[in-house]
Length: 100
Length: 361
Image: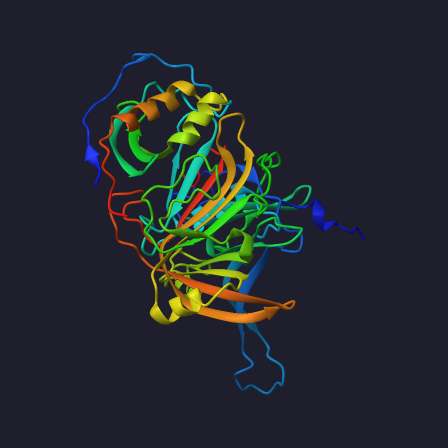
C-alpha cells in the first residue's frame, strides 16, 4: 500500500524558524518545510501524506484533497508554503491506487 | 432566607490535564456552560439496623458505607470543546495534531483504537454553587455519553453524559476559568453517509466539505436524515471501584467492555437496509458537522464521526407524522485493518476541530 520514502525535503526555507503564526496559543513555532515520511494515493485527487514537523516531531498523516488545498492556497487560507509543500509531495507519489 | 439562582452557578473542568493519580485533584482550566437543569449531587450508600431485632419498630442507627459524586454533564447546544472533553475522557485515547497550513487550529482525533483496556482517564471538576462556595470534585470519569442531532428548525447538536467523582470533596478557589470561545456544533452544515466500501484510512484535517467522504462507495443520506445519534458506554461496575482497604470513596476508575451504537432515523426510500439487516451487510458510516472557519486558516470548527465497519442491529420502519421513516441501529464492529490512521482502524473515530491545544495531556 504505502510506499515509504526516506526523503526529507528541505528545499525552501532551510532549517530556520518560519514565523508560522500560532494565534497566541503558546505553541512554539515549527520549522518549515515538514519532513516527508511516507505517502499513498487514496483515489484520484486524494492522497495521504505522513510527515513530521522537525526531526523530533510526531509523525502525523494528512489527507490531501488536491482541489481543496489548491483552493486554500488561492484564497489565502493557512500557510501557503506548507500547503504547497503538501501538494508537491502528492505529485511525487507513484500513480498507484490501492484496492478499493 | 436567601434565594440562590441556579444560572449563577459555574462548572470548571481540567479538560487539558488528566489526573496522574486517580482521585488527586489537578487544576481546572476551562468553564463548561452546561445545562441548568443538570446539577452535581453527592451519592451515598447507607445501611441501618432495621434488619435487626431489638425492641424498637424504627431503626436506632445508620452507617455510611460509601460515597461518590454524580456529576452529569449535559449541553443542549454542545460546543466542540465540551464534546472533545467528554469524548476524550470517556473513550480514553486522543491524538492532537495541527492540520497542514494551520496555526491555531487543532484536530483532536479520539479513538477506540489505542484506548486503555480497563482503566479510564479521570479529570477534576470544580463546582461553584454561589460565590465563595467552591467545591472540588477529583476523580471524575465518564461512564457514558450520547451525542445527537435532529432535523428541524433547531439543528444544534446535543450532548448528555453520566460522569462520577470519586467521592472526595474539598474547598476550591478557582474563579476565573472562562469558556472556550466557539460556536455550538450544528447539523445545519453537515453531511451524513452510509457506505458499503472501506474506510480510506485517513480522515480530513480541515473539516471542510461535509459531503466529501472518507469512506468508499458512500450513499449521501444527509437530506433524508431526521436524527443522528451516537451512544457510548463504558458500562462501569461502580460497586467494584471500592477496594478493600480503600476507605469509602472510589479508589480506581475502571470500565468493563465498552458498548456503542449509532442510530440513524431517516426517510424510508426502499428496502435496501432491511435487506442489509437480513444479510448482515458490512457498512461504513460518516457524519461530519462543519462550523465556522478557525481564523482564516481554512480549517473549520466542528466534529466528524467515522465508523469504519458496522452492521445493522435493527431497521424498523414506522410512521412519523404521516411519513414513512426507518430507524437504523448500527453496531460498530472492530476493524483490525492496519496501515492507516488510527492504526488499527478500531471501531469509532471522532474528530473534533477547535483551537484547544491539548486534551487529557
